[in-house]
Image 1: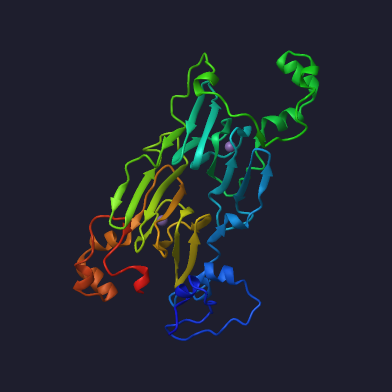
Image 2: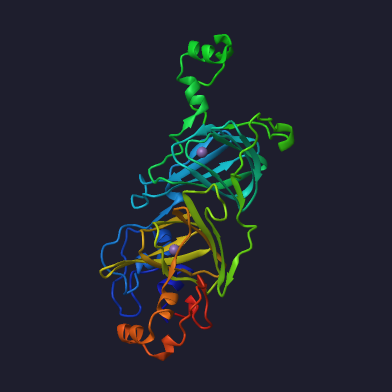
Length: 398
Ligand code: MN
Ligand code: MN
């Protein structure tokens, strides 16, 4: 008995570019990368509904350059690797216990999600107000463009995702304190700080970026009293601790400037899709969507209009992208929960549900437009569910 490409992907059978439903295609005689083919069953054998020219909407952090330093590492996905992703760029960073992402700033705002472990962040704003906080798993931070900051791994170290509101950003090209010192005449440093030039004899020759330091003491022990007080809007938010919107098939936690006021340029949803469930057919009327997959595996078809649609497979560590207003769904294709972040360069999270749109439109108009009967019309929902699951509609049954 023949297996579908998805069954072949999870077994020892070598997957072949042959569509079971119509017999189209033929065996791949090689050369080929079978591991990659197993990871991309919907590329090897696209659904018959895929058509036309849609650029790549998937890039994996596993295909990026690793910047290794004493104290941690970083890797990034920007327009240089992933040309469609113009609105946002992502950085995956690890800091050891005590490892420091040095004092720096940049022209873009920074939004972050702590994946594992704990870190301490610091900042000072234009009014001389300061900020210090410890963040743990599932917590966010946001630094507005141009505001200086630092990140340090606490006991056990940490790993996090950084998202910047410009696809051409690079974390290797920020404004760093060590870089500025190294590229300022020593007599100017002396004049600026009112100390002899000899005070600068040991400064780094170049950008430090990440360095190993000792684990800091308590937040209280590091606190610096500012005469101007502390920053009034928190730079952190506990997203995973936020009560989720529970829907049949999963859960959603939405965070934008209405929940996290400082986050004026980035909105996000943390989505969980149970096995057999899917993020329903929808689109976003505000901006492009940038996705980061945290756990599990799924597939997404992006519909671009004019008969154009393309399907991609994603797993933990991948980034996906959907241009403004293009239709899409995300289906869990594995047997564990699929977790991902959907993110927007926007002050708000908004989406339009296909199901809800149809339910709130005159019934005879929908019927005559799509040639569908009461079976579908009666099943339409006036509520938006975001993540759906119906008995008998699991991916495995297809
Ligand atoms: Mn930064
Ligand atoms: Mn979406």
